[in-house]
Image 1 (cartoon, one colour):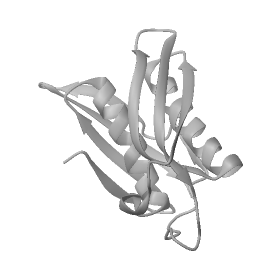
Image 2: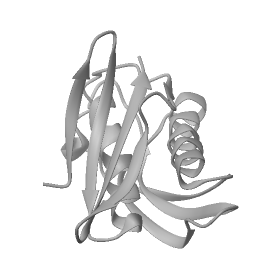
Image 3: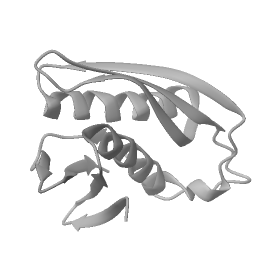
Image 4: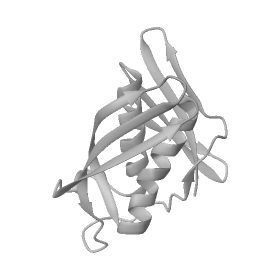
Length: 140
């Protein structure tokens, strides 16, 4: 399992998994997109580059997910696949990704939730045994 949806009173969250912290970040982004629409119906017609920074790995996660939300809200771009180009989860954390997808088309794409923002509420990014796990709550 790459991610699961967490039903939180008044909000919604994602628990994402990965063999590495990078994999968990990718799966958190894909999980978030799945809250917005059925990502199986997204075509990889174009690619965009996204980068984000944070003072910590938690801050980086929130910044990264909010940048994905910004691209959707501002340009209608919805992703299906995410590739990490550069990643550092040290203090002064940084991520650069390439997101493959297309412009959201309400005639072809199901509209699910209106995701407003990733939050710091109960945020968690940690290595448990040999796998990484992320929990993040979104304002809807």
